[in-house]
Image 1 (cartoon, one colour):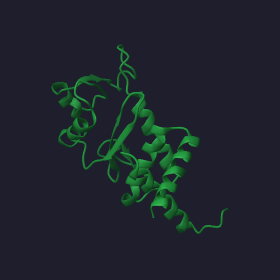
Image 2 (cartoon, one colour):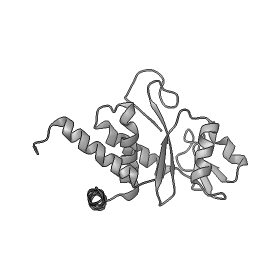
Image 3 (cartoon, helix red, strand yellow):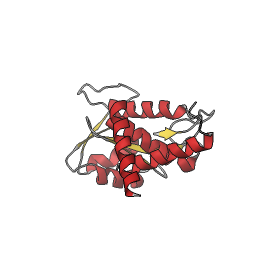
Image 4 (tube, helix red, strand yellow):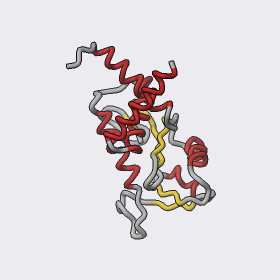
Length: 177
């Protein structure tokens, strides 16, 4: 449509994703038969945090063990904060930590009687997976950049604002070189 070769367009999008990550601080993979969710073969384990009404933070992790997730939580969440989680047993460590821990057991209820929920982060995962599905598979080596693009879009929201921010970042990079 605009006269660019496919590989040129891919390189342009990759450079934009790298620019997004330079200005910013669940499981993803194709649909497969066999085991699903946590521990599914060939999927990329991803951990995410969302500050209510604030920013989302994602990290690609090696495994979903407490020893992997606890340092990330301690780095990104202030002591004394209320941490809302699902009932995954790894989060048991939060019960005896410096956080106030509230659980939502999704196998029983979606929102607890005390109005505890994790709808915000579930919304992010839903939007990110829907966005990434359009690419019909992303190589693992480039997945980080796509994930951070989803994080940036979710946090900063409106397309018009995102485009203005991207233009400003691009201009500042061009003026630097």
